[in-house]
Amino acid sequence: MKLYGYFRSSTSYRLRIALNLKGLAFENIPVDLRTGENKDAGFTKRNPFGSLPMLEANGRDRAQSMALLEWLDEAYPQAPFLPADIEARYTVRELAYGIATEIHAVNNLPVLKYLKDPLGHTQDEIDIWYRTWLKRTLDPVETRLAQLGTRDFLHGDAPGLFEIVLVPQLANARRFAYDLSESPHMTRIEAACLALPAFAAAHPDRQVDASA
Image (cartoon, rainbow, N blue to C red; front, side, top):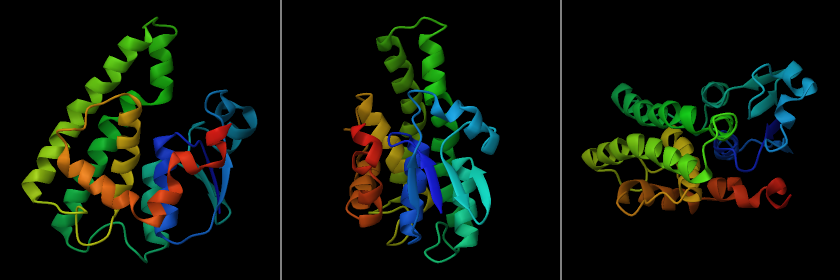
């Protein structure tokens, strides 16, 4: 397997965590979002979305992180990302997709670049935008976790789809100086995850392109 990604991309971070949790060996190939390498003709010929991550696996180039996570869980069912109970699976999806669709869609790099140029917003205004959309979804996620009485992980004694999506989003939140002091459930789960080798090895600071 070859994972094409960018060290700071939350969606690439998701896939690094997921592959590690599944115990799957992969080659990590950096694609520089800052220079637009993901929009080069050679890359978009393979991935028309021009997005990251892209996973080369089983003779096919696969894009879109949430679809990739579902494919990985179906293709490699050991250490499943979703619990067996249908209601528990719904809860995981409710929270994971809330973050993936409501935050990432409006706070990804192309959106932030568009706010700056051509729309002409300052970095301070963009940071306010970013934190506004974080709060809009992270607050209800924290409330739901409190209602559920969660411990180290959302369900059971191992991380799954929710944690795979949550941890990269919180890493981005800290980059934009988002206040997580009133989010004890999310930060407790984050700390439990980061103590695991699969999450630690996937951290942006430990990627080969982090020092580039």
